[in-house]
Length: 320
Image (cartoon, rainbow, N blue to C red):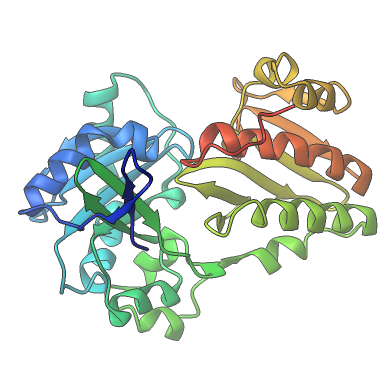
């Protein structure tokens, strides 16, 4: 999508896209801005682990998992290298744990099945994009660089995802994943857990509303929840037999005491729990147990607020 600069006279002139000269220049920029771009903590730059040298090791505090980031300037397939790194994450957990503890200085509970490999590149070929159809825990991010302007977006992931353990079991050749019948996570699979009709209706309301916030919202099924993000994560849904648990990447106090009247009034009508200090499958700090569609409709106001506060795009949801 072209970008235009407006002059003081109201005339538009198209900005010419550029690029980073080297992968190391791109890497330095991303690592400097890991927190603001992706909400990740930088752990290590080009460490050597069992003869392999990942570009960047990061840590996602929301999913409690390590992340490998690779940078490409074009023309290279991500599949073989990505699977190799996933295998490395599975086989050398002690090495990754040591790197995490050296940087963060504390004991960590790591959710290894939430690990992923991110690729950051200016453009992707059809063949490279087809990598996503395998359902591997890959993320392909496409960036554009203009004069003083940096834009980045994630390519939509598939509807099903294969967990790290299944990738490691299948081996390093992606085609064998289907041969071995690897376990997959899907929205349909999560939805099938809901036995109560009212809870199923509530789930559909929450999911439909969240996906319709923006065409760029990414839906990612994980082992125990379905995550929603646009640059950063803003909501997760955990389907249960008779209810739906909604997790928001917001503090309970920020929801209840929001200066936005619609948010604070809605928060006062729903049973919001502070789960920031509790062990949990999903990653948000606030949890709402929803059992019917009326509660789901109310909760959409809080989802919209979390989206506005956490996504790259700051929406107009903050207006009265």
